[in-house]
Amino acid sequence: MIGRFQALLGGGRIALALMVLLAPPVVADDLGDGEADTASKLRLLPVPIFITEPAVGRGLGASLMLIHPLRENRTALAKVAVPDTGVEVSDGRRQPPDVTAVMGAYTDADTWLAGVVHSASWRGDRLRYLGALMWTNVNAATYVTDRPLDFTSRGASVLQRMSARVGSSRLFLGGSLKARWSDTSLTLRPGEDDPIRVGLGRTSDVGLAVQGFFDSRDTTFTPGRGQLVSLNVWRHDTSFGGDFDYWYIQVGHAW
Image (cartoon, rainbow, N blue to C red; front, side, top):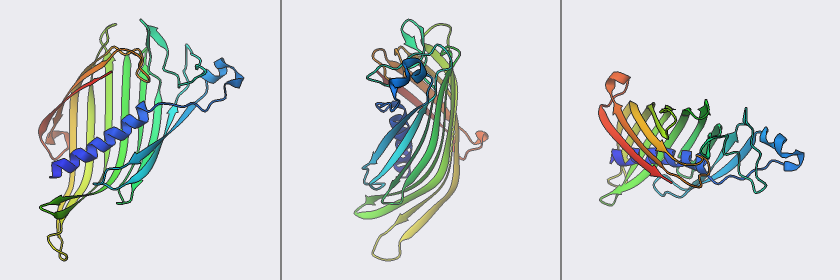
């Protein structure tokens, strides 16, 4: 049961991050000053977040994505515009734009989330970086044999990921660090009165990963062709400063 809620929490953070980084963009810049000037401006992209999961309540949120101006080899926006999809580096591939996003969400069950995410690409897309910092307060509920079971978890999470291109290929290799600190409790209500509360206490979960991915997409922002295949092998260990020891393997595929 605890694992189910932890999976729900983790999935929610991932979903929000994906909404921020992959949502269809709309540009508010005025192109009247000329395309060259527009290419040097900051892009601000607001993204609404709608939460409809009954377990954590219904609510709303928002994120604001900042697309940083290109430092070199500037490319102008198309009139039907999406934010810069980067600088062309070779074979039709474009270097991903540097993006910073802040987000927040709240539900009627007093569940909330706040965080910041930053992604960057350096040296002609030979190096890619992703970092995230999240604060969460999750109040969820489910039923066990028709009895309500409440789940509460408060904490913070951090993710750091760096990868490097292998030669001139489409293959990247790298590593990740992920850590979460939380204070969790369960409340079972067998009757109208006297709920049973079990405090699981404060825990930390720290993991390191070896990762590799093959990225043949023409751009990471709004790809028109290609695909992404990834493999991450995680080791969570008490020697890293956490309270748990386990292995975790992630396999991903996207177009």
